[in-house]
Image (cartoon, rainbow, N blue to C red; front, side):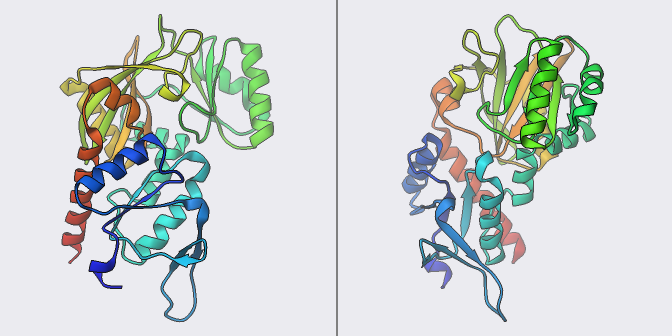
Length: 307
């Protein structure tokens, strides 16, 4: 297939009705990119054979290799969506954010390690995998309330508050026993009203921010958990912190969540597939267009450098 026959842009997303996917497709259409979308749950990846290129089929139909791919990766589909990315990139597609970086951002322990290694402020965090380390983990983080997180998860899923030591023990017993995976233990930072600052980073530059405030009776400020959003002024210090976090995890397009603590600002998470609904509503800005423009510019610059 010649370059002119390849789709200029393909989004990897399991639903075209998701707000961010829909907005990105609309923005790309207005930029005359004729975008396509591929549902990763419907594809088959084929490799191998003498000189045979990798092939992606959707419901048995071979798909053309796009020029540029834009992944919208959720925690439940991460390995498969990244495998799809790698298959297409091996066949010549480009993405400004690499599969390994997306996987790193989705892995809370790997992201936290990267942030800490770069000297960026993060909450005290203990990773635990075995039940017999529960007491040591609680002692190491200090405090009398804890936030427990599964290794991966978006939109507030896999994050629970343990209000007492007894509750923390019981929750960790269940979480470790059920998943037999790494669980992160962090001290709970008390606030009058829990909130965090979501910063949207596009092409390595912080371009917008919004406050996300938790509803009554909830400690998670995620929009999908009923959190309220409002526009935030992004000063140079916080913009630089968000950009440094994006660079540390190597995801130049992301959402960086920051929180103010008594000791100062800390980086909570770096989200490699940031949602646009809350931040567009809070700012009143068309951020999907900026997202697509910068994504395509970064991909084309990479292609030019490779020639």
